[in-house]
Length: 222
Ligand code: PMT
Image 1 (cartoon, helix red, strand yellow):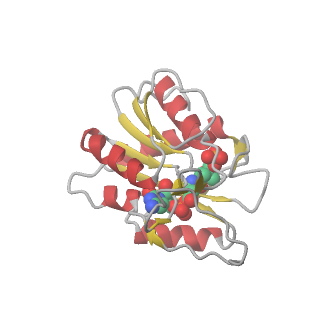
Image 2: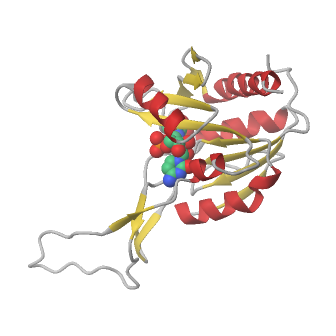
Image 3: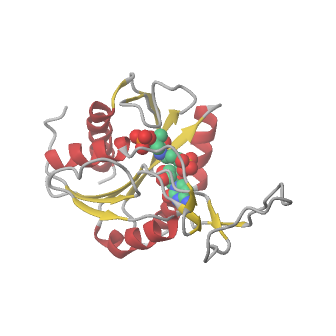
């Protein structure tokens, strides 16, 4: 299964969280460690793919043989993706991109005022990176991820359609042994034509399984 070559395929992967600044010292983010996306990047590179990894801030070493672009915010990730997306055969969005950012980032540190017991922040929506890729005229094969805490299959199906994806991998992030930050995961993989559930496994093994599935889907559509 791992022997199936990906030689010559150009694959772009987003990974990790994004950070949305509130002021010069604070930000909004999430618990993504980058492990899922980095595992896919490493597995794809080992099998001969030309990998571009666009990564939010994480504490992982760069996988060997991979071109990496480091970004911080969702807007930066959007720009980095669109700079090289035209050249790609496959796009895989594992990043946990912040849905919202500050309408205006405070230029100075927000000061606590003793009499002010609540603080309201005005946030605006970030662009949906994967949806923008799926809308391109010359689009790559687009694979999304979905972090869900309930009704995993239903929400994943909904995202597959709404974001116009070719495939979506859903993980149940309410289970602490899988999903965010753990070394293992379990995926519910949906395509327009079918559904498959993987066993619970290490993220690197799942990366290989997923890449083989994508390669098969590409062959079918050719
Ligand atoms: O990094 P790890 O600790 O290994 O954890 C892995 C993971 C749980 C983060 C990963 O497996 C995962 O599920 N990633 C998607 C997380 C997520 O928040 O999904 P979402 O439901 O918000 O978004 C759905 C899809 O749209 C994703 O492919 C996401 O990358 C993409 N998206 C979302 C918002 C946005 N503004 N732009 C996007 O491209």
